[in-house]
Image (tube, rainbow, N blue to C red):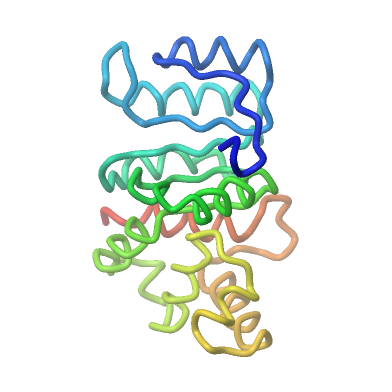
Length: 197
């Protein structure tokens, strides 16, 4: 992280130490593992959720060794931005890792492409079944935290076409334009919440 220009202000080995360290220093971004001592189950995720309750909008990136859709769901339940969920093997690419933490710190949402891919394969429930295949592709890229411009490049679409697809997704998922919440995050949450139906 330091070679990418970021200052690491604390390194801890247990979830309770993570909570204490964040309360002491209030960092710009928290990076944690899902599994941490003392129980080595979901202690790191529970600490992240606790920290987001304490300081809503605190940028947090959670790392995991495996695709755990339930973990991803819980992380994104508060509906705010500035959160990410990546598989640990993704951080080996320093440029991609740095891009993810910068997007999260800037208020974005990042979900590992493998998690997105597995969710798309298993998703056949309403309201998501209202989406066209292209809209599902666009929503998948939104879930990865991609901007409209990045979606244009990935799918070889014009910016107007991407905006049209995103507007259609919002309409089909019943996300009104006057909501105070971030509609992109709410769209991803709708997707995550309907994976087990």
